[in-house]
Length: 309
Image (tube, rainbow, N blue to C red; front, side, top):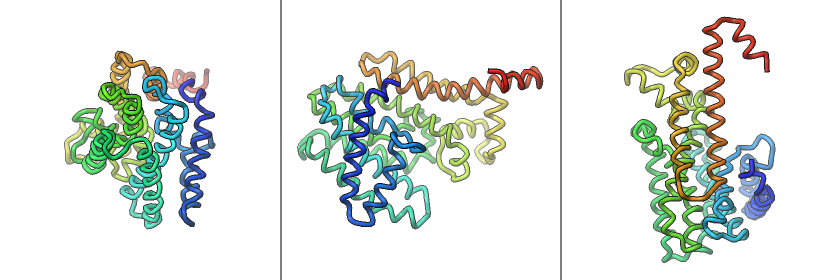
């Protein structure tokens, strides 16, 4: 995974610097902040791997003409923004008082993000118009995704929950005077983010079903039923195992990949990252299809599939 391995030293620097920033927060927010950060540090075991959130500035270095120092600073700003929006999501999805106690931490992280980006973009910069646009997209998405059913309207719309991530790509291009490239890079990024959300939804469908959270895979399956029919875990499993719904789901991500491959932009790490996500969904779809075919042929075929490598 060249899109990751090439930048491991940069990631180590970014997370060390972010740790220093958070350690300076007033107690006990510093301790809570460092603990929260550790859950997302890709260099630690069992952490969430939100690679694109902190690697995007490095992937854009050549396209945007960014220096290594600027890419690192933008990445640190991204990490702070990522943590802020994740805390917002946690609070919206939970009624736990403990989650709400994270709000002051989120505000300090948001302030750090602003401090870093204001160092690059004065108040008159076009960056802040894009900032307003992306935050409006995020706010609308997290508020209306259930009623609007974004995946069925347009699968790209599910990327809007990650709209703040576009701040780093847009910021990088503005720094280099490449504003004319923003629409093309944004389009490319939205296709990647849509597939990434699809992969997350496939991995989290049980949890999302239980909590009532919007999920693109569940949206696709629910479209097979009357609106008043309940969607249960058994029904979801049936559509995955028997009807092969994951194949239809994967076709959407495959169309995203074809679109990305045809773009004239030369951002190979972003293409490779998308291929990595796509292959993880394809592998699961192929495995389920193989198991279904083996079941049709009988028990021996299924045993061979599961035991012979």
